[in-house]
Image (cartoon, rainbow, N blue to C red; front, side):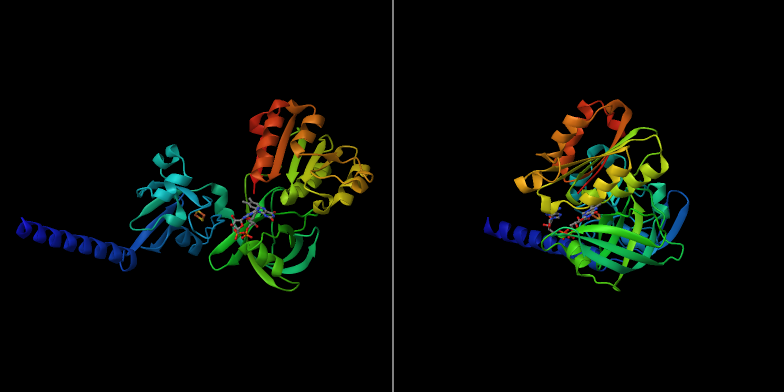
Length: 361
Ligand SMILES: Cc1cc2nc3c(=O)[nH]c(=O)nc-3n(C[C@H](O)[C@H](O)[C@H](O)COP(=O)(O)OP(=O)(O)OC[C@H]3O[C@@H](n4cnc5c(N)ncnc54)[C@H](O)[C@@H]3O)c2cc1C
Ligand code: FES
């Protein structure tokens, strides 16, 4: 019996070692030669096999969004592979739903190029450009939010964006983070962002550490969250630093659409977390079409005497004040919990779901 078992164990052991060696070689040494990468049937790149798809695209100036530095946790870099579809990885099966997996959607940061491949990405991603800028100003607007003004040096024709869109900032080697454009004034050569400091957060700490004159790199503009060219009333719902993209949306509506009303429902924890309050009060005084509803979770008596704040959560203010839901469209930005509860109120007030747009962060 022993004479039979020992050779079997030894042979199995050898087989396991050979398999492990093959896997190691495949991972670290394998050379796949060059591969053809076809994007949207219109652009063909020759890339080094073994490269990850997101890197191959980046090297060819196709800038996909990413919020996790290619760790496979954000899902931003999803593309549809139409030819040369690789088997899905466990991490992809978590982030991408079953239907999309079957249709070839994969994470480009997890897709290693081993043979020719064709992919489809939203056409607008092909227009994303790289920008270089210099910090013009960096000021606290609350205890943990900084407003950062950036002068755009390159490209010389500056940045064109839709109100509500965001930019991806390079915040470390291979690391980017998204920040909404918060500019109230439209200039091709200047852009403003507002960044909330997250304790030990890579991107927010980096951006908070930059001083006037420091250089930075970013990509964009990204996103489907932008002001639509319609005649509907504009409902803006913001939580905390989610106020950032609302400003271009509000200012563009007031400037461009004389018949559209705008309502801003803005929720923060305390008065110290509220910013641009005076600016919105002035805007309300000067524009009969603009209505401002600041909501504080904690309302102290000294603060309550300065303005008719609502106390509680922003979705309740929305429920109490919103009329003409069926003639409105809504833009929401802020923490997921606030967005989910506000969407519920908006739908109950008759805002069609198709007209509710949001960015959760
Ligand atoms: C479309 C879009 C637009 C955005 N616009 C803005 C904007 O205008 N202003 C802005 O400040 N941010 C914005 N963000 C969020 C921003 O991209 C970063 O996610 C955020 O700054 C945290 O990044 P970080 O690198 O500092 O933290 P990370 O290094 O990524 O995270 C550090 C730790 O903090 C945790 N963490 C991350 N975010 C939060 C949070 N909000 N609260 C508590 N813990 C957190 C992480 O789970 C992790 O444990 C936006 C995000 C998206 C997707
Ligand atoms: S999942 Fe975040 S970059 Fe790919």
